[in-house]
Length: 213
View 1 (cartoon, rainbow, N blue to C red):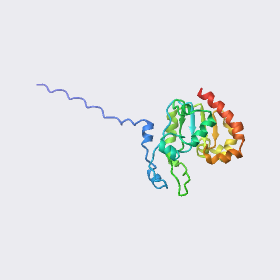
View 2: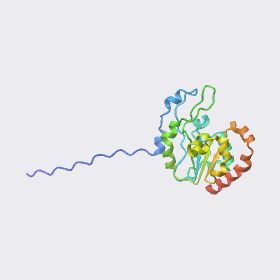
View 3: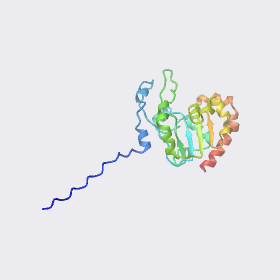
View 4: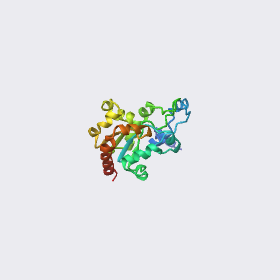
């Protein structure tokens, strides 16, 4: 009886495919210890609002407590003001096929002992930002909200602070608009800088309408 030929061995299994970026980001717990040590003592909850193909990128700071609870970005008074600045209703603003919201930190950083928001942990941007922006893909318009986003994206061009950077908005338009944070805490800033509403916002709304249309 003739011995049967040896069966070829199965090829070695390749590395398992990684889950999609939004799933990996949603599972991130890098800052769990940091958040547990804050005055709020909360657990991480990444708020993810982007997908490939968006036209408008909102590069913001970090979720606040209300956004942390809701799981929806800008689900607070800041969001109401920002949508007014942009001339967008909720339906358009939250349309992920057209708008990507990629903050400098995806989780609520917590409060300090005085009840003030802590800054976004740099670890988040260092770990996730490049991949998140690549996943969202090229956009036609980028809004840089606040100093953290402006310094990250503009580098030395934002070194003089938010007011100086926003005042030079014409240098970055029409593809980039630096903006102050729309928090109620900046109401006094808006009163001290009337040029923002008189000059920048009309140009911004026109550009947003062009990009979103």
